[in-house]
Amino acid sequence: MDRFFFIIGSLSAFLAVALGAFAAHGLRSKLEPEMLNVFEVGVRYQMYHALALLAVAWASARWPGSSINAAGWLFIAGTIIFSGSLYLLSLTGIRWLGAITPIGGLAFLLGWLLLAWGAWR
Image 1 (tube, rainbow, N blue to C red):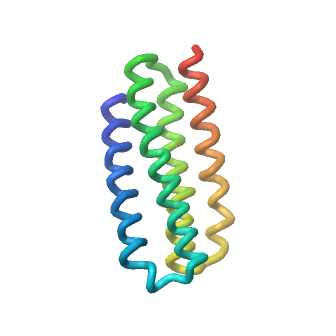
Image 2 (cartoon, one colour):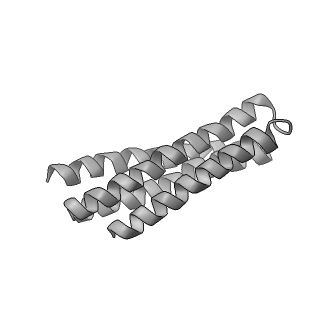
């Protein structure tokens, strides 16, 4: 699992950089500042949790266990739900997408707790 989480984390970081560049160069003139900011929050949290997946890969090799693996899956789910909903919200203007964003945030929070728990055990 350590290699899997490292690969997914690396690809997610790549995508975060690409999306950040897309926002800076391709969306700045097309989105209102508020929606551009929403997109950039999605990019920022994707990058944070791409790095978190690299930490999960390291922790998985050092302290293998279900808590560490669950943390990695929660970071992946959180990125898809949190960042994905913010990307869609900013690009489409569909406001109800903002209502599912906190589910991704909760996945991030649980992931951090499980990562700490896995290291503690």
